[in-house]
Structures are given as C-alpha cells and as structure tokens.
Amino acid sequence: MVRLLALVCLLSVVRAAPLAAGPALPPAPLPAPTGNVVRVSSVAGLQNGAASITSNTTIMIAAGTYNLTAPLYINGTFTNVGIRGETGNRDDVVIVGKGMSAASDGGVPFGIWVGGNVSGVTIANLTIRDVYYHPIILNAGAQSPLIHNVRLVNAGQQFVKANPNGAGGGVDNGVVEYSVIEYETTSRDDYTNGVDVHTGANWIIRHNLFRNIRAPQGQLAGPAVLMWNGSSNTLVDANTFVDCQREISMGLIERTPSDHAGGIVRNNFIIRSSTISGDAAVLLADSPGTQVLHNTVLLSGTYANAIEYRFALSSGVTVANNILDGRIMARDGAAGTVSSNVTTASPTWFVAPASGDLHLKPTATAVIDQVASPRAEAGPDWDGQTRPAGTTDLGADEYVAASGSVPTAPRNLRIIW
Image (cartoon, rainbow, N blue to C red):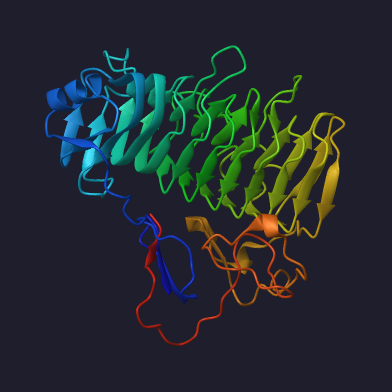
C-alpha cells in the first residue's frame, strides 16, 4: 500500500507500506443504514426529521449548507437512529450555528443534542461548525454513540460533551473515529475540550485529528481528550494532535473512587509548536492501571514533562516504548513502571514534524529496532502496521523502508487531512 500523507499545508510524502496497513482516511463507508431512511434537503426538514425520529430511522442529509435556527434534538427512548451526510464526504454537508463568539447562542446553543434513552445513535459524514456551546452533546441515558467521519469547527465550549447523570452513570461505549476536531485560530476562552466525557466506560477515540485545541494568549485550554469524573477503560489510539496545549488526560483531579481507571493511550502523534504554551501532553491523574505505550511526542520546549502521572491512587501505571522530547514525571505519590522510553527526541528523526507527520526517517537509528519484545497491548502502529517481534521500533510509527515499487491492487490510499 502507498501512504500518501497530504496535510492541510499541501505538503505530501509518499512511502511504501504493507498491504495489511490500517484504515484509510477518508475512511471506508459505513454500512448502509438499516430500517427507515428519511432524506432531507432543507433546514426545516432536518429539524423536523430529528424531532420526529423513531427507532430504526436514519436521517440522510443532502449536500449543502444548513444554517440552524434551533438544535437538532434526538430525545426519547429509541434504538438504532442516526444523522448522516448522504455523500459520505464530511465536507459536503455543513451544519452551521450562530457563532461561537456571538453575543448569545441565538437559539442554537448546540448542534446535535442527544438525550432520553437513545441506544445506538450514529452521527457521520458531516461538518458542524460555529456553535455557541457544543456541536455534539450526549446526555446520560444515551448509550453506544458512534461519531464517524465528522468535522467539528469552532465550538464555544466542548466539541463533544458526554454528561453524567449525577448518580454514577453516564454515556458508555462511545466511539469517536476518523474525525477532525479543531479551532481555526483559538477557542473563545479556556473552557474547552475536544472530547470531554464524564463517568463514561469503554470509550474508543481513534484515528482523529485534533488541531488548535488551545485558548487565547495567556490562557490554558483544557485537554483535547479528557476522560474523567469516574470514567474507565478508555482507549485513545492512533490520533494526531497538532498545536494543542494539553493533549490527553485520563483523569483530571484527585477523588475517591478514582477519577479514571484502566485504559490505554497508544500510538498517538503529538506535535506542539514552540510558540504555544502548554502543559503535559499525556496526564494520568488519579488513573490507576492505565498504560501509555508507543506514543510519539514533540513538545518543542513548551513544557518540561511530556508525560505525567499524579496522585496516590495512580498506581500500577505503565509507561513504555514512547519517543518523547521531555521527561516522564511521577507526582504526588503516583507509582508505576517506566521502561524503554527515549526522552531526548530530535525533530530531525521525523518526516515533517511541523505538519504533524511523525513517521520515522531511516536515519532515526536511536529508536528503530530497539524493542525486542513488543507488547500485545500496544496493537498495530499509527498506520495499522504490525510490529515485528525482535525488531519493533519505539514510538507510534513502525518504520517501513520504501520498496522502490508500488504493490498492485493496494488496499487503500491513506490521505491525512
């Protein structure tokens, strides 16, 4: 397979890779919806369709721009419902609020609001932008949401917000994948996150781009991915973070029981410009049993510690096989195992770090073939490539030398944002 890495600056790099490489971006289409399909092509049709949705119904939105006059509410006891863009291209359907920095929400505080008892809601193949609070809000009672191939731009607060019920329950089994979550410049203020989940179990956040999750000058934004308030067993896998101030936080504060428990942070690319102030890239705060494996992090001197684990309940932590340009620090009584990490990474080891491309160059010999026994929990690398026993590389990318030829019938063409 040929990986074509085309970023927003139009810089591209072509590298040969095995046919078994991972999912493409744009992703393969979702299966066709089952049940009823309601096609809409106007704002009124879209809002009415959401308000009158029933189980086993998908609203399919025609290409176009939809300037909301109210949120799209999905509220009731439903199973298997969805809102999708019809073409499969997230840029073809653009849902627009009244602006994240307007004087008020203008009657559109949210983009899509899900509550009641909704099990299995799919939001896919569309863009939501310029919303005063949350482009997507999921309230306790909603379960198993799938957010697939969306672009969320310019949110007044959190882009994806999953709320608790106040009694120890929340939104479980969520998936956020193949999506772009970003500010065009900065947030409105410091109260923002890309994905913010309270009291949620078994979430998967994979193959996304988080860009510019940062506050105005002099302020510090919340983490791009924040899993806390009793959340557990989160997988944060193979994402790219570009110019965020805090990237991944499993837990945030000290509490009993723990703020987060278990889970894995693995195979992520994290790059931060030297001009952007920030904090630790990966924080385990009151998060026992969490693993941080095979990530590649370049903070460019913006903060001394690339990875921190904090508080006495953060026991049984594992930090292994990461490439970092900052320290790994235990704080406030945290305890764990730290092994086989490099903390002196150089930008010269990577293909195009300024653009978020942290694939290894062949000259990065300090980190190539340095792991004799790969950890099964680390899974495939950022591209979905298998890590070979005996010659595994550190960090998120398993280096594959160019073969000099393009395989016939490649599995996919990987295009990055």
